[in-house]
Figure (tube, rainbow, N blue to C red):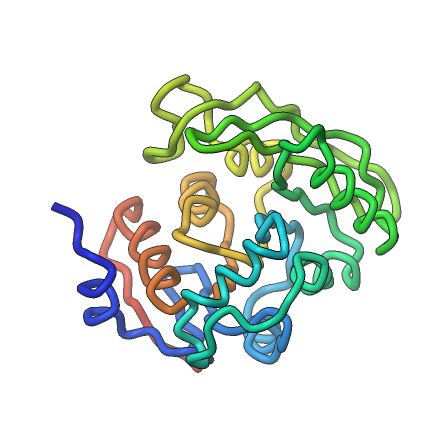
Length: 241
C-alpha cells in the first residue's frame, strides 16, 4: 500500500529553499515566481542545454498548486498561469535554449493557443505540437524554441497512457519527455515545475543530467526517490544548500 500524503509529509526531509544532489542530478525546492532558489541551483549545476516544462495549465491550477505547496502556509494566494509560464521559461529565454512545453489541449485548443502566443511574446518560435492523452485529460506538447539557429526537434509518437519506468502502460509508447530528450545529444536539462519526477526518470534513463525545481517539498522528495532505483550503485542523497 502506498503511503498517504500525511505519511509522506512526515517522512520528507526536504524544506522550502533546499537544494539537493542525487548522483549527478540536482533538485531545488521553492517558489518559481520568487525565483531565488532556482537561481541558486542554476548557479551550482552545470550549464543548461535544454528545458522541458510542464507548468500549471490554468490560473485555477496555478492557485491550486500553491494551496498544496506547504511553502508559506497561504492557501491559494493570487497568481496566474501566465506568471508561472514566464518564470518557468525565463532560463530558456535568457540562455537561448530549446524548450518543450506541456499544456492543456482541451477547450477547442484555447489553452494551447494562449500558451503558444505567450511564448511568442517572449521571443520563441512555436511551430510544432502533438497530442498527449492522459487518463484524465488531453494535453499537447509544443516547441518553444529560443535557439538563435534551428536545430533538432522531437517527433512525438502519439503517446497515450500512464507512466511506469520510461514506457506508458496502455500503449507501449515512451513518455513525452523521453521522446523529447531522445531527439537531442544528452546534456543538462531543466525541469522548472518538476512535480513527482517522471521527467527526472526519463533524463536519468537517457544519461542526461537533470536539474529539477519544485514548489512542494513532498513532491520533490518523491521525484528524488524516483531516479534512485535506476542507478547501478548506491547514490548519496545530499543536501547542498
